[in-house]
Image 1 (cartoon, rainbow, N blue to C red):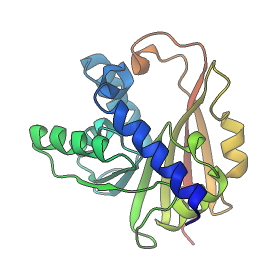
Image 2: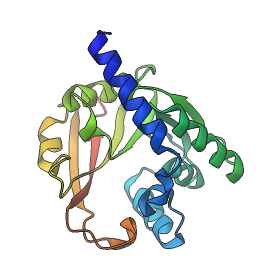
Image 3: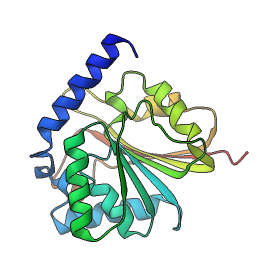
Length: 208
């Protein structure tokens, strides 16, 4: 790892460590409002293959979606670069009585075996990675043949993020079936109306 990359990772880790205490204050982060939580539960349930299935929540933050996935009876692994985020995720999981494996890990270099997961879920992270195309290639290798990738992303009013067509155009060729669903009009997901582009990309990897 080059010195520049290492310093960039340390800077990102420190930033998110500092954000951990207040991260769940955002309605779509903490999912504390039952209406918001139910909206995310419905979205995931309608986008995932039926359990049992192994799911990697990559860039899991404080584990809110990981808990939803566990509640839907999936076998869940969560990873995040921030130790403080993972600590909160573990505490929330213990309080909820779920069994989820959490690991501190760089999403750009996931340290898993090939073909380990049936599903990868990633929310609001891909856009922040230095090389999204390469990240997607690496993620595809840890999915089983026929596995599914769920990317919840957006292009925000600040001019940052990724537009849905940018993701679709850079998906590895192993993904034979791709669907994009607009989420901007679903205020219940965000705790209020939004005006920027928010969406989910559901991509199924070829079974061969």
